[in-house]
Length: 94
View 1 (spheres, one colour):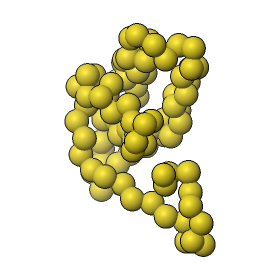
View 2 (spheres, rainbow, N blue to C red):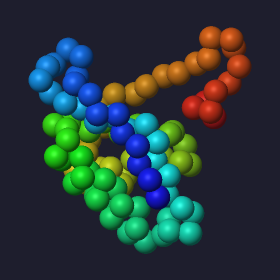
View 3 (cartoon, helix red, strand yellow):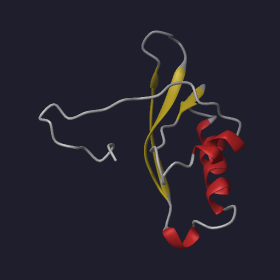
View 4 (cartoon, rainbow, N blue to C red):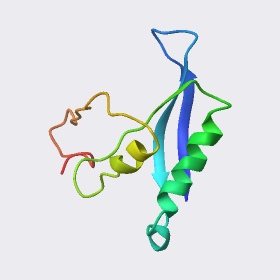
């Protein structure tokens, strides 16, 4: 699998460095048991040397794996809304 994060200073709270998740992929054949948890724990621990905090977004619905983040000690803090301005549906919309 892979995880891509953007690590940057938080715009209104310098000098806090924040890691924002951009992409996360885990091969389907490994999405069983605790593999995902162990992978995300590795990702979290790897980011500790680069950032002060992590923001991770999850899809709403059947692709919501927020419970894994909560097991890692993360807490939900906001809900994000999206739309395409040309009126078409984007992949974030069910």
